[in-house]
Length: 101
Image 1 (tube, rainbow, N blue to C red):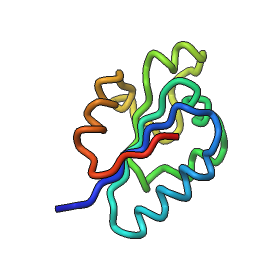
Image 2: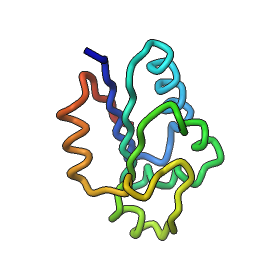
Image 3: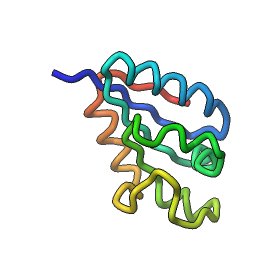
Image 4: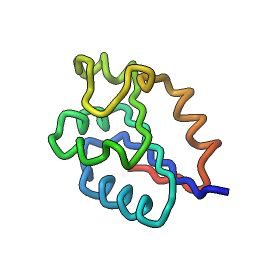
């Protein structure tokens, strides 16, 4: 069975840690899924955010996106990955390990 790591990002700080943890997990063969919400959505506007593309499955909260006035498209995020907090609940259920930033 594949090992999985869920990362919940609700802070607009620590993007470098999110990227480093994601890379380290991926290098160990661990599947990484990240959900960005609240202030964490502001990280999608940071140029370093693009480093996560291709090394993690990512979703973003639609409500937070609108609340912060961020206009789609968001680089690295497919339209189908604009989600609700139910995606966050699925993340918790599906992952072996779960980290919050």
